[in-house]
Length: 165
Image (tube, rainbow, N blue to C red; front, side, top):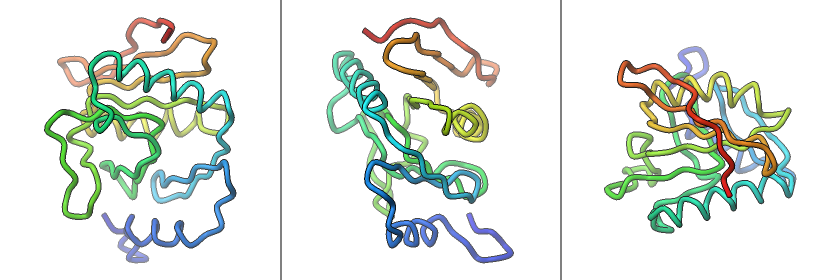
């Protein structure tokens, strides 16, 4: 998808990002054509690790669980680096060497004050548009998770909250 005014593409924007001196411990992604960088704390990684362990224990092969890997989503210049993604068993990389959003079975985001607006706003909308069946929102390792899922009518609904452990 390109911005008609500037000829921007996600590929071009990610090329620029790769050349920038993104500080260690920060994650960069593109949401609606805007570059966002957010710090990754220990509690953030611990929560992602808990999610990975649960996905692996529930039968997902290591090769089907991804983190901070570029995934392009519907909408204007949406290239996300999701905290955790579970892919279907049939998932294969596309011609660009990227995973396709159509193969996603679950997205999990560990939110913080700096990411909450994107995670509950444009990213949630992009996941719904993409037809992602389950969107898991983790606030921290000590709080319950919010499980958002797609209803048969196509709406996103909050499911039951429960601890990961």
